[in-house]
Image (cartoon, rainbow, N blue to C red; front, side):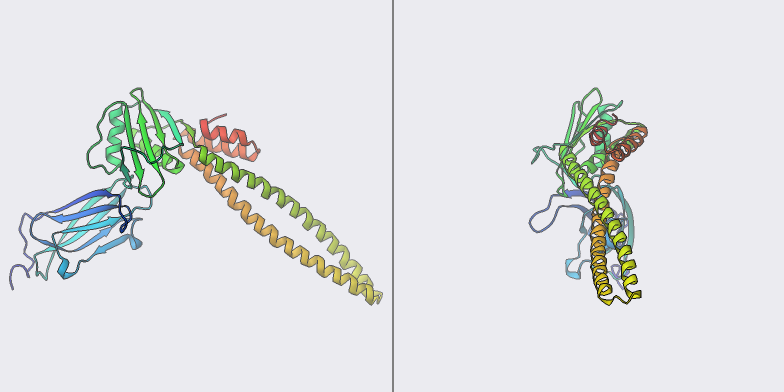
Length: 349
C-alpha cells in the first residue's frame, strides 16, 4: 500500500476558506459563495457544512465525482434572513487515489448582512428613511459595517460616512449616511431591514435607549388601505350579527306557529310555516358562512396592523420601543388613525 492510499499527506497541509458575494447571472441566482481550498496538491474528497437555518436539514454535503476532484470547492449559500450564522465545515482531505482521508474542521461566521453588495450608483433611490443621533464616532460605525457586511476591502473610516448597498434578495437599496456630529440616516423602503440594521447597530454600540424619526410613505399608504378594510369588515360584521339576531327571533316565532298549527291539525298552515322555517334556516346558514369569511378577512387585516406596530417598535431600542408599541395599540383601539401614523413616525404624540 502506497502513502497516498494510507492517507498520508504533507505535514504543512492547511484548510483555507473565504466568503464572497456573487451577484449571479442568467444561470445562477445571487448568492454568497463559500470557497474551500487546501494549501498544496492534496484534494478535497468531501465537504460537510453545518449551518442553522440555511440548509434543509441544517446541513449540506458537497461530494465531487472522481473525475472532478481538486484542491478547491465552491459552495453557493443563500441565507433566507439577515442573521449571523456560524458555518461549521468538515472537509475530507487526502492525495489523489487515497482510500483514507484526514478530516479538517474549521468554523467560519457568515456576517449578518451578507446578502447585500456595495454599489456606486443605486438603481432607485429609497423613499423610506430613519433618522437618529448616536454619541459615537464615525469610526465605530464603520467598524460595525466591516464586521456585518461582506466587503472585498474594508470600508474607509472617513466623515461624513456614506455607505450604500443593494439587496441580492430583490428588496431594493440600503443607504447608511452619518455626519461627524453623530446624526445617522438610514434609507430603505424595507421597514423590516431598517429595524434589523438599527437593532444590530444599537447592540454593537451598546445603546440601551434610542428614539428615531421615521418616514416610510409607501408602507404607510399600504397600512392606510388595510385600516380602511378593517373599518369595512367591522361594519359588515355588526350588520351580519344584527341580521342573525333578527333571523333567530323569526325562527323562534315560526317554530311556535308551526307547532300550534300541528296541534290544531291545521295541516295547510303547518306546511306553510315549516316551508318558511326552512327558508329562514337556509338564510341563517348562508349568513353564518358569510360571517365566517368576513371574520377571517378581518383577522388577516388585524394581523397586518399588529405587524406594522411591531415594525415601528423595531425601529426603536429600549424604553422608546415599549412606548411606541403601547401608544400605537391605544391609538388603534380608539380609532385615532392620525395619532397612530404620527406615533409611528416620531415615536410620540
